[in-house]
Structures are given as C-alpha cells and as structure tokens.
Image 1 (cartoon, helix red, strand yellow):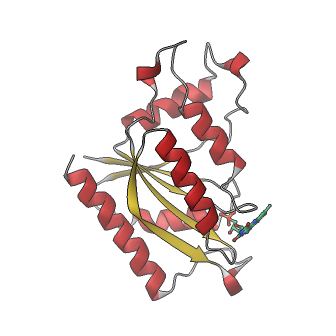
Image 2 (tube, protein in one colour; image 1 turned 30 degrees about the vertical axis):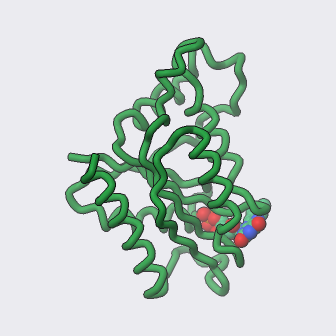
Length: 181
Ligand SMILES: Cc1cc2nc3c(=O)[nH]c(=O)nc-3n(C[C@H](O)[C@H](O)[C@H](O)COP(=O)(O)O)c2cc1C
C-alpha cells in the first residue's frame, strides 16, 4: 500500500492547515495516511547533528517510509512557517558527515497547499516550492490556495465547492504521479 505523509506547517492545535490536510486525506482511500508530529524537533544547530536527536531519527524514518509528502502551511509575513523551514532544513542534512546520498527528502514527491489570509498563501507557496526544488523534490503542479476571509478564527474549515474541487484535483494529481512511479 502506498504511503502519504501529511505535514502541517502550523503547530497550533486548531490549525486550519491541519484541518485541510485531514480533508485531503479522505481522498486517499486505499493509501496509508499518517500525519507527521514534529513539535519536539529542536531548532537546527549543527552541533546537534551527529549523533542526531531522537526526534529527528523518528521523523527521518517516517519521511523515508513515505511515497509522497502532502504539505499545508500558513503564510506568515509572505513566507511559510519557521517550524516548517526548520523541519525541511533538518531533512536536507545527511545522516552521517558528508553522506549526501543519504538525504532523505531528495527526490520525494511533494504536494503543497495553504490556508492563509487574503493572499491564500500564494507568496508562501511560491517560496516553499522554490525551497523544495532546491532540495531536489518532485513537485506536484496543482496547488490548493485557501484565502480565509470571514472564516478567520473559526475552529474548523468549511470549504467552498471551488476549494473542495481544487483540493480534489490536487489529490488526484498526487495519485496519478504515484501510479507512474
Ligand atoms: C505572524 C503572522 C503573519 C501572517 N502573515 C500573513 C501573510 O503574510 N499573508 C496571509 O495571507 N496571511 C498571513 N497570516 C494569517 C495566517 O496565514 C492564517 O491565520 C493561517 O490560517 C494560520 O494557519 P493555521 O490556522 O493553520 O494555524 C499571518 C498570521 C500570523 C500569525
């Protein structure tokens, strides 16, 4: 069974980005879906790399075991979250000094989406896509953008028909790219 690892750029308990990922997961019938918990990852410090922190060992394994990552991030000041940047920086590092072929995120299929304010995460998704390209990830072209408007501050995310359809298209694109692998 193919595995999708969902990653929210928001650590907030009532995160609407996490909510969006849970709605996306419903489209992946017949796939193994899991959600990455990385709140215990320390800030990247090269003094901590070898031996790696226990949280990083677990997270690397979860990423290595997945066939695709599905990332949703809020937009903070026109970029993606610092928590997500920290995670991706850790994932860009080798498991042993100089062992760059062991970089776990390299070549991974990644889908990106965002729930944000008026921009709908367009700026942050652009920057995130650029970072993922730098990490040699394979990007899904479809992106779901949700501009909250009056839904700001709500405990859950009600999608419009157009948003639900965009999310559905992105999920289908992931499935078809995985079928080609
Ligand atoms: C520090 C901060 C900066 C923000 N900057 C932007 C921004 O530049 N563009 C935007 O559209 N929304 C911005 N927002 C709104 C968040 O993207 C929005 O609240 C998002 O839904 C939070 O995600 P979450 O519900 O998953 O935690 C900002 C919010 C915070 C807290």
